[in-house]
Image 1 (cartoon, rainbow, N blue to C red):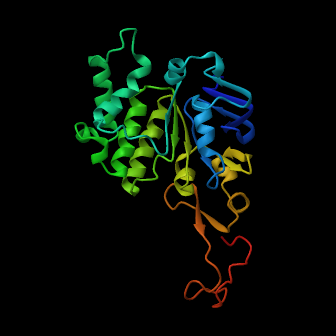
Image 2 (spheres, one colour):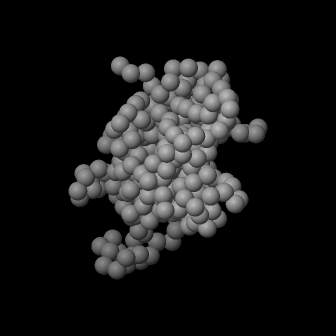
Image 3 (cartoon, rainbow, N blue to C red):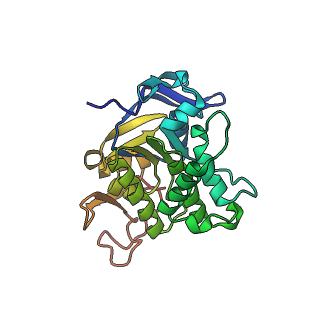
Length: 282
């Protein structure tokens, strides 16, 4: 059995003087694509940043590729895991190609210069994410969706074994979202692993092998998508009623919002609108 690329045991996560998550037990194996879901402020971004080494664990154990994270240099950690933050800094005046090239930093030698190989890897990453045509543009001249592809290219240029992606589809249209997630899926099939913080529950259920649900500072539920993505779990975690049905083509579970009684014309539950005090009302 292969060793986990990332393993956390009893780990606590936080920043400044605040502890956001406690008792995190999580392992990420080669080939896995795992989604992290929860309400805003549940700790998804904090978890990813802790696993990447940006935030040191507040307690417990964290190993990257079998080595305690605390014993690794920043460059060594970056060769194992790369993170795509939700709101990355734009690097004022930096071209898109220069931003992607920064992903090669962990691989630089003592002289510290980017060579032809680094440039080739960066351009190939931009090609794979569909943003090579943006190479000469500055980041401030791109749309939110274009920037998302640029920063994903930077992650690919880093050539990590683990991709930690924070809301990678939040600024993308449906075509862009499926293209990005198809690419991540292909990378996992080639032996990488990916952990994605996701707000879009249906995309998470469609693409991810496993799901991790965060609630009230802990992992509330985790497991195979087919086992944990159900109406009971979603109602508990998100405090709202959702109907779960199979995807008509893929068969993966998908969630549909349930409107209040009388909100939709012809609703057989009655034509009296809810007063907002029903269980699960937002």
